[in-house]
Image (cartoon, helix red, strand yellow):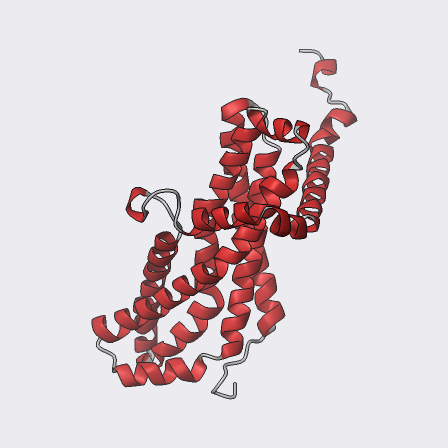
Length: 282
């Protein structure tokens, strides 16, 4: 093997970096165009927006047949919050503060668990579906066919889905939030035997309307970011069915990482680096 074959040209070495920045620019431009076309999509294609709302919330089949996101959000929120109740009670019991377990439900479920769990369910159930749908349309030239028929593909296919995600995430998130509260209460009061009155006292003392509002805002931001990321990967999918599958995997990884980063940033923005405990003066 000669020394010439071992050398790599600077252009070839920098190609992945350049391609990465080009991809970021393509996605950023795509996001801006989608947001810009939102009013047009809501006014002109409102029937499609309502159809997407139904598909996101209830699916095209029955809930037991795998359709809909309500059941997924409810189940995931309930399971995660049950663990919060069980492990939180056990940890506080070690230091003699088990009656304060209601505090965990009011703070942890509201500020972190409920919005993150709902967003992960939305990414896995709805986001990958968006990527697959748009990717299949791209590789079968259906998107190009829409353009030749003077139908703008971006507002018709993407902006309508983004509007539907915005309308759907609010009731979906509230379902998950109620499920998280109920699951934690069930685990602590009925399984661990904590007094219901004591649990409710700490729960209502720490739960504030501002926390619920900020938590809802987090869920809305997560839903919009997930929709943009998954639709972008599907819209620009290449390489046939295999390429659509790879695009769905990349979109899911990207959206989950984006949600975790945004969760940290929004938590700091809403509650600060040193969060206070409402009702306790701390």
